Length: 190
Image (cartoon, one colour):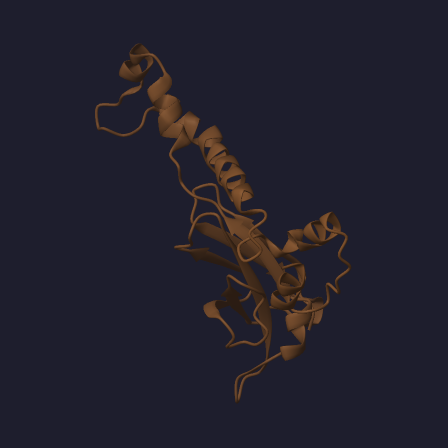
Protein backbone atom coordinates (compact mmCIF):
# COMPACT_ATOMS: atom_id res chain seq x y z
CA UNK A 1 0.00 0.00 0.00
CA UNK A 2 1.38 3.36 -0.99
CA UNK A 3 1.09 6.10 1.62
CA UNK A 4 0.53 9.69 0.50
CA UNK A 5 2.33 12.96 1.31
CA UNK A 6 5.16 11.43 3.32
CA UNK A 7 7.22 14.21 4.90
CA UNK A 8 10.22 14.20 7.22
CA UNK A 9 11.03 17.64 8.62
CA UNK A 10 13.82 18.63 11.01
CA UNK A 11 12.46 20.52 14.00
CA UNK A 12 13.94 23.99 14.76
CA UNK A 13 14.57 23.08 18.41
CA UNK A 14 17.11 20.49 17.22
CA UNK A 15 17.79 16.77 17.63
CA UNK A 16 14.29 15.94 16.40
CA UNK A 17 12.57 15.01 13.14
CA UNK A 18 8.80 15.19 12.63
CA UNK A 19 7.29 12.64 10.24
CA UNK A 20 3.83 12.82 8.76
CA UNK A 21 1.86 10.95 6.10
CA UNK A 22 -1.65 10.29 4.88
CA UNK A 23 -3.29 6.92 4.38
CA UNK A 24 -5.33 6.27 1.24
CA UNK A 25 -9.08 6.75 1.59
CA UNK A 26 -10.21 3.11 2.00
CA UNK A 27 -7.57 2.37 4.64
CA UNK A 28 -8.61 5.08 7.09
CA UNK A 29 -6.55 4.99 10.29
CA UNK A 30 -4.17 2.24 9.27
CA UNK A 31 -1.29 1.51 11.64
CA UNK A 32 2.14 2.16 10.15
CA UNK A 33 5.48 0.92 11.47
CA UNK A 34 8.24 3.55 11.12
CA UNK A 35 11.81 2.21 10.97
CA UNK A 36 15.01 4.26 10.58
CA UNK A 37 18.68 3.84 9.75
CA UNK A 38 21.59 6.21 9.21
CA UNK A 39 23.31 4.49 6.29
CA UNK A 40 20.42 3.55 3.97
CA UNK A 41 16.67 3.08 3.80
CA UNK A 42 15.45 0.10 5.84
CA UNK A 43 14.41 -2.79 3.59
CA UNK A 44 12.24 -4.71 6.07
CA UNK A 45 10.19 -3.93 9.21
CA UNK A 46 12.99 -5.30 11.41
CA UNK A 47 15.91 -3.82 9.41
CA UNK A 48 16.79 -0.87 11.63
CA UNK A 49 15.61 0.98 14.70
CA UNK A 50 11.87 0.99 15.38
CA UNK A 51 10.75 4.59 15.85
CA UNK A 52 7.05 3.95 16.51
CA UNK A 53 3.82 2.53 15.18
CA UNK A 54 1.24 5.21 14.52
CA UNK A 55 -1.63 6.17 12.24
CA UNK A 56 -0.66 9.63 10.88
CA UNK A 57 2.46 11.15 12.46
CA UNK A 58 5.56 10.36 14.50
CA UNK A 59 8.07 12.51 16.37
CA UNK A 60 11.57 11.02 16.42
CA UNK A 61 13.63 12.58 19.22
CA UNK A 62 17.11 12.17 20.69
CA UNK A 63 18.81 12.32 17.30
CA UNK A 64 22.39 13.31 16.56
CA UNK A 65 22.87 16.70 14.88
CA UNK A 66 24.12 16.90 11.27
CA UNK A 67 23.19 13.25 10.69
CA UNK A 68 20.89 12.16 7.88
CA UNK A 69 18.21 9.68 8.93
CA UNK A 70 16.50 7.42 6.39
CA UNK A 71 12.96 6.27 7.19
CA UNK A 72 10.81 3.55 5.68
CA UNK A 73 7.14 3.26 6.58
CA UNK A 74 5.56 -0.22 6.61
CA UNK A 75 1.73 -0.34 6.72
CA UNK A 76 0.18 -3.16 8.75
CA UNK A 77 -1.61 -5.64 6.48
CA UNK A 78 -2.76 -8.28 8.97
CA UNK A 79 -3.52 -8.32 12.69
CA UNK A 80 -3.25 -12.03 13.53
CA UNK A 81 -0.40 -12.70 13.07
CA UNK A 82 0.91 -9.15 12.72
CA UNK A 83 2.29 -8.64 9.21
CA UNK A 84 3.56 -5.68 7.25
CA UNK A 85 3.47 -4.66 3.60
CA UNK A 86 7.03 -5.49 2.52
CA UNK A 87 6.52 -4.14 -1.00
CA UNK A 88 6.13 -0.65 0.42
CA UNK A 89 9.88 -0.49 1.18
CA UNK A 90 10.56 0.83 -2.31
CA UNK A 91 8.25 3.85 -2.20
CA UNK A 92 7.16 4.63 1.40
CA UNK A 93 10.38 6.44 2.23
CA UNK A 94 11.56 9.75 3.60
CA UNK A 95 14.89 11.21 4.65
CA UNK A 96 15.89 14.26 6.68
CA UNK A 97 18.91 15.64 8.46
CA UNK A 98 18.53 16.40 12.15
CA UNK A 99 19.67 19.88 13.09
CA UNK A 100 21.33 20.80 16.36
CA UNK A 101 20.44 23.30 19.11
CA UNK A 102 23.19 25.92 19.07
CA UNK A 103 21.36 28.56 21.15
CA UNK A 104 21.53 31.25 18.48
CA UNK A 105 18.62 33.02 20.19
CA UNK A 106 20.63 33.23 23.41
CA UNK A 107 23.66 34.49 21.52
CA UNK A 108 21.58 37.18 19.81
CA UNK A 109 20.12 38.16 23.17
CA UNK A 110 23.58 38.51 24.72
CA UNK A 111 24.64 40.84 21.88
CA UNK A 112 21.91 43.33 22.81
CA UNK A 113 22.83 46.28 25.02
CA UNK A 114 22.42 45.55 28.73
CA UNK A 115 19.60 48.09 29.09
CA UNK A 116 17.36 45.99 26.82
CA UNK A 117 18.09 42.83 28.77
CA UNK A 118 17.50 44.63 32.07
CA UNK A 119 14.00 45.78 31.16
CA UNK A 120 13.19 42.49 29.48
CA UNK A 121 13.72 40.48 32.68
CA UNK A 122 10.64 39.30 34.55
CA UNK A 123 10.31 39.02 38.33
CA UNK A 124 9.71 35.24 38.24
CA UNK A 125 12.88 34.52 36.22
CA UNK A 126 11.03 33.58 33.02
CA UNK A 127 12.21 34.90 29.64
CA UNK A 128 10.76 38.27 28.76
CA UNK A 129 8.97 39.14 25.51
CA UNK A 130 12.17 40.20 23.73
CA UNK A 131 13.94 36.93 24.58
CA UNK A 132 10.88 34.91 23.52
CA UNK A 133 10.73 36.87 20.25
CA UNK A 134 14.36 35.99 19.51
CA UNK A 135 13.46 32.29 19.76
CA UNK A 136 11.76 32.58 16.33
CA UNK A 137 14.79 33.62 14.29
CA UNK A 138 17.12 31.74 16.65
CA UNK A 139 15.60 28.35 15.80
CA UNK A 140 15.92 29.03 12.09
CA UNK A 141 19.51 30.23 12.51
CA UNK A 142 20.27 27.00 14.40
CA UNK A 143 18.99 25.02 11.41
CA UNK A 144 20.98 27.11 8.92
CA UNK A 145 24.13 26.59 10.98
CA UNK A 146 23.50 22.83 11.08
CA UNK A 147 22.97 22.66 7.32
CA UNK A 148 26.12 24.66 6.64
CA UNK A 149 28.14 22.42 9.00
CA UNK A 150 26.78 19.37 7.17
CA UNK A 151 28.19 20.75 3.91
CA UNK A 152 31.65 19.98 5.30
CA UNK A 153 30.78 16.28 4.80
CA UNK A 154 29.62 16.71 1.22
CA UNK A 155 32.48 14.68 -0.24
CA UNK A 156 32.53 12.07 2.51
CA UNK A 157 30.61 9.31 0.75
CA UNK A 158 29.74 7.54 4.01
CA UNK A 159 28.13 10.59 5.62
CA UNK A 160 26.71 12.66 2.77
CA UNK A 161 22.98 12.68 2.14
CA UNK A 162 22.10 9.93 -0.34
CA UNK A 163 19.89 12.34 -2.24
CA UNK A 164 23.10 14.17 -3.25
CA UNK A 165 24.73 11.08 -4.79
CA UNK A 166 23.41 11.89 -8.31
CA UNK A 167 25.15 15.29 -8.13
CA UNK A 168 28.41 13.70 -7.03
CA UNK A 169 28.12 11.12 -9.82
CA UNK A 170 27.57 13.87 -12.41
CA UNK A 171 30.58 15.72 -11.07
CA UNK A 172 32.88 12.87 -12.02
CA UNK A 173 30.96 11.82 -15.14
CA UNK A 174 29.80 8.52 -13.66
CA UNK A 175 26.58 6.89 -14.82
CA UNK A 176 25.04 4.89 -12.02
CA UNK A 177 21.76 3.09 -11.56
CA UNK A 178 19.90 5.00 -8.84
CA UNK A 179 17.46 2.13 -8.34
CA UNK A 180 20.24 0.16 -6.64
CA UNK A 181 20.87 0.04 -2.91
CA UNK A 182 22.52 3.15 -1.47
CA UNK A 183 25.57 1.23 -0.27
CA UNK A 184 26.20 -0.03 -3.82
CA UNK A 185 25.85 3.49 -5.20
CA UNK A 186 28.33 4.82 -2.62
CA UNK A 187 30.81 2.06 -3.50
CA UNK A 188 30.49 2.80 -7.21
CA UNK A 189 31.30 6.45 -6.62
CA UNK A 190 34.28 5.51 -4.45
